[in-house]
Length: 219
Ligand code: E4P
Image 1 (tube, helix red, strand yellow):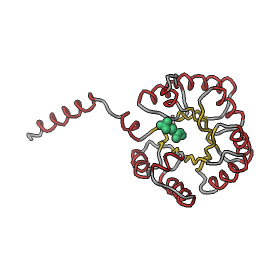
Image 2 (cartoon, protein in one colour):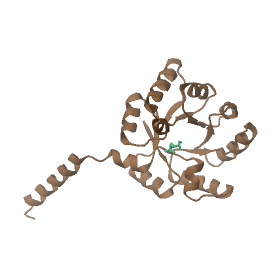
Image 3 (cartoon, helix red, strand yellow):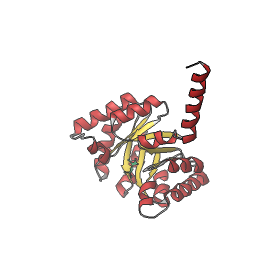
Image 4 (cartoon, protein in one colour):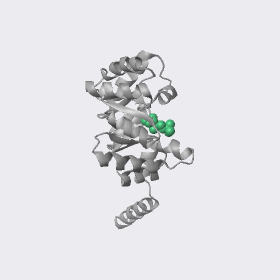
């Protein structure tokens, strides 16, 4: 299972990279705005800065909602770095754009996916990744993990290559459940990755080991 970090914050990306378990980065316009990255040139430079930190796929989202605009933006984003994956929303022109990019060998991440039908369309259009937003589904009392299960079943039934990128991950149980179901990737905040390593028995066990060692050394 690949771990992507879902942020545009360079310090957090560096910290996850230093941990040695990071496989890529996802961003979106809200995350870029949160870091105060504005203006097209700054945005493009920020993607380059992210690519310089991480040796893995970096999703960069288009802002256009029409086919021609998405193609123009997506081609410019893809030209920035070989690891850029063009993030395209699940709308009619987005599906057309994914097919266009796929035919041109440009990799895509189909975002804002909330149903199995949308995931099926994304795979048929040739998306490299599909991003079902599980946390946002949970927010409206719909089981996000059930959607991951359905997509896994459908993709396996037909041998689709599109990778399931579980997005909008909010906590460690999301990560564990996605790993059990067989999601290819999860993307979440740094706090979720760090929470995975915590267990009170690890902390108390280590404390005892160190105390016993010190005692044995006459300290
Ligand atoms: C996915 O690529 C999105 O950036 C992201 O996971 C959205 O998560 P949120 O629902 O926490 O905003």
